[in-house]
Amino acid sequence: MATTSALSSLSSLSLHTPTSRITSSRPTISFSFLKRHTTLTTLKASSSSDQSETIFFEDQNPEITANAVFDPPSPPEGFVPAPYFDEGADETEAEIATAYEELYGPAYSGESMLGKDVNVMDSKMKKGGGGIGGQKPKKEKIRDGFEERVVQVRRVTKVVKGGKQLKFRAIVVVGDKQGNVGVGCAKAKEVVAAVQKSAIDARRNIVQVPMTKYLTFPHRSEGDYGAAKVMLRPASPGTGVIAGGAVRIVLEMAGVENALGKQLGSNNALNNARATLAAVQQMRQFKDVALERGIPMEELWK
Figure 1 (tube, one colour):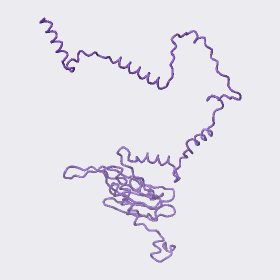
Figure 2 (cartoon, rainbow, N blue to C red; figure 1 turned 180 degrees about the vertical axis):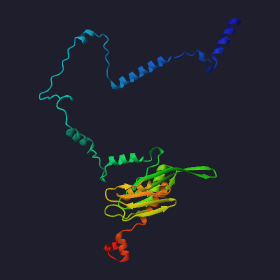
Figure 3 (tube, rainbow, N blue to C red; figure 1 turned 180 degrees about the horizontal axis):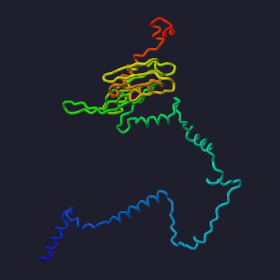
Figure 4 (tube, one colour; figure 1 turned 60 degrees about the vertical axis):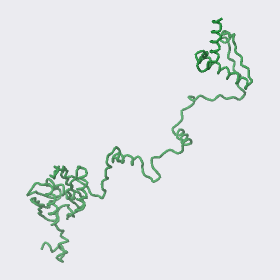
């Protein structure tokens, strides 16, 4: 009797135990079961909504499928089959261009509305650099009829408190080969910049060279600049320019074709070029001398 009362008390205790503590006694539901149950529920709901019946052929006979004959319906009267894409003659370039214009509009002719050829403009931009990749855009050359020729480029240094400053000095002669010539000198940290600055300086110092109809000097002359001394002499037609160094470059850029030149002093290129300009500035035409004296040109040689 005591054992029976103990068992009944234990059963009463188990009945009054909270449900949160006996989680281990609950049955586990697998994921596959939940998935099947959800799929079946969805199929039932869809079948009830569509009210359609699905028939499954359980007894399939593969022999019937293998011996089946394809019997398409006959085409109607007046039916013309469409040609294949590779049949017929090839299209010409004109037909292709016409079809392209119908789809995408007129083709680009290479010229903009302003009339400038864009392809040429693109090539100029590529040659000029355009500032792409951190490069500085190159400056276009001044087109004023003057030609440029570099006489000398030297590396010069300037001693300052913090050390030495390295720069480049360029000497440039500009001329139109019609009697106008100039000499310029400038310094910069780069060679290209030094040449550009010296060309601008030369254009500021243009000198007119007097010449006869035989493209030579009207008379002999001498000029000096610093320790450089230059002697210039006229020459007969066909002689050419017989000179050297900076003197020859200055005479050629001025347009002189027959002349004699000689460097008598220093060999410095800048001083010889400026001495040549000094000698040229001392020359005068015969008509100017006759006008100053107030006499006709025929009396100059009397």
